[in-house]
Length: 261
Ligand SMILES: C[S@@+](CC[C@H](N)C(=O)[O-])C[C@H]1O[C@@H](n2cnc3c(N)ncnc32)[C@H](O)[C@@H]1O
Image (cartoon, rainbow, N blue to C red; front, side, top):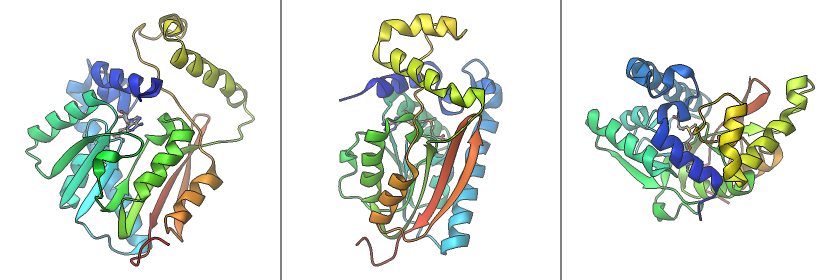
């Protein structure tokens, strides 16, 4: 069953997909014509950086199959399709997947399949991937679901496969903004659970009345690392970064060739 964040993502896909992916004003619907090249360049840069980092730390990655979970409009799928034989893009929003499909056709990219997501990843069947990737996605999913999704994703890792994941972490921030984070989370909860509050809250926040909500969630570092360990990741490279009051982490790892214990 779809929850309120899934419904909001469908609306982002319909209303303003590029801004939904990277919330910078230049990627708004009415401006994307001018900024699309820059948008996709940011994806090229990200994918090159991630693959370089993994190969530098863990050695080469087999380049047969890759998966991008929460693929949005294909910003990262497109560069991945040039690096891997076959690539699968998974997303909960049909409208996002339709936009990805248009972006792939325009570039005549034919080695990508697109799959609508559920938390069990049931549409992936028994497929195994050499590289599993997810960036700025789990933070928008309630952790209770997100931990299950992480576990399910890692079950699709081929022996010797590598992964890159990104989560927002529970952080300690003593600034006024940081201490008021509970209030922001409360507003997000209210607008997510009580749809009729959505428009007035947008008006108060001086946003477009019809703009969908964008849920943000923090994950627990120990629980996240335990999931990686259980999937066979003995060594995990962690990069920390801050965005405003959010502390987030990028994880790079590769499991052993003999597979999961
Ligand atoms: C901020 S965008 C990032 C897109 C892409 N990863 C990128 O960096 O270009 C988040 C994406 O995650 C997708 N998403 C949100 N919840 C999801 C879920 N439960 N399962 C799969 N995808 C989800 C959204 O539809 C959206 O396309």
